[in-house]
Length: 523
Image (spheres, rainbow, N blue to C red):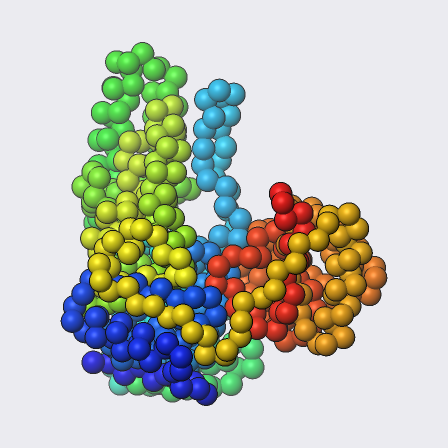
């Protein structure tokens, strides 16, 4: 069993000891499903952390939104400072999927903005899963989307070892083949540079630089270097350089994929022409031929993920490989707020399927594009080894599959009672709120305010700022990393009031907040 080292300034109290013992014995008895039915504020995260420590399995913690995932990740990092606690969410700050609206004959091209920091954290998660066993990955639902084949990603890693004789030019070629690019001026993630006998690499999975020093053809030293100060942080004897992208396709496989795409194109164009869809046939032929040309010349094209079935060598309908395939066979899944997260798992495939079907029917994509998709619910559950559902209100399905293994945790260790609820008229609600905020600020407490729309959140923030209140707003247009920073600053007291549209999501843990105001609650 691997060693998880939980560090906390308190011991289990209330219902926690019994819940920890019951869950641990259930998992050790190889039961597949169990539910922790815990009331709000009873310390479910701590209970789960104790169970992870005692069963000692690599763990995936699944949360239903990015903000909750970030909070869980921070809490677990505090509990397990010596272990690898990783964060895996969608790396898009903005994402508009490719779509076609037949009624208005409107084609919408895919546009996306990738967050470099989140991409690094995703690579860090997969690297940890390959290199160590004491790993907890906190992920959003994006972990059920295709990620590239784990075995190919591992095979493409470049091993470096001090004292080993290597051809420096070959290492440079290997780096280029796994999507690193040479830039002798500016070194950043996914780039490398050469200066005499020194090779410096910006790995895709961390923010330190790897410096490889050669003596002739022999590796003389491997060091981690601070990218800003140039200070040597650590010397190592050996390490692996993992690819800069999760999708790695060997050259021979790429040639076979191009052949298969060409063959599918011929068959589909014939099919469309027989059906009298000449415009669609022409459109598909033109678009796919262009993509094939790009794949042959540079190994990449826009929308390359739509050809992932051929590039990975999968059969039609076969599920894509995803983050779960990077875990070893014996792993543990924890689904937080399962009453919200489990329906998300079911819904992802259907939404993706209907959009792709329209693109395929109208000649924008080949039928194989439908296999670039999230996992179906049944495919997801077939990969799950053991699972703990965590919720204050678990759904019927979770309770049903857990059978008699529903463990209750009702007593709060803090002894805090449920909050008082006041219903007040909407007339003069903003001035009433201002008075309440001033009262809380005088006691150095924090306030959450929820509004109906983003515009209302922004306008109310401006109104309160003009009246000397330290206030910020939070909504979907603020990127994932910034959201985490805003919540942290609220807790630290850098401002007193946070206004948002969807702040009352399950699982948000802000002990400093003593007032939650819901404006226009009836709506």
